[in-house]
Image (cartoon, rainbow over all chains, first blue to last red; front, top):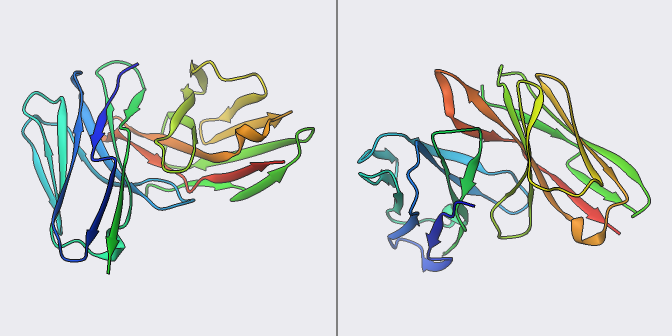
Length: 111
Length: 115
């Protein structure tokens, strides 16, 4: 079983602060996705990265895929209460249809 | 459009009941997935269908029985479940080659409670 480790596991910050979530593995992935999930709902796709070293920006969110395609990070600037949720990374290896999920990061942004 | 729909949204069943979860997508996706998720944990893969054939079964107990009637539909038949099977059940489909094939798109989930 491939394992994607996310850190931190839990994060509670004040509104307006910045934060970074990390997703690390010893395996190489052909693509990596980040999702945000609210309780009782399905994960909502934030971004897909496929190229080593790629950086994508989505408003206050910045995503980076490691040069070796083994790790990724999500940086949120000026966090807002609406950013609260479970953040999940998921990677796909070159073969098959299986995606491997990270261990998850539960973020709470306090107003 | 990247919509995956699931019904029902909520389900309560007894341990002797038989019920089915349904998932549908009309994006031409050829791979569809069932996941089980407990609160604040990542989704756990149960089954993968590729071109309507079961390609991955993650050693799921036989009380869960998947079915793919056609390329747009995926069912999960439930029978004699246990209380520990209570969870959020998620369906996902994978984008087509050249059109988001690197990505899974998730439905809203079915919250299942087994009494």
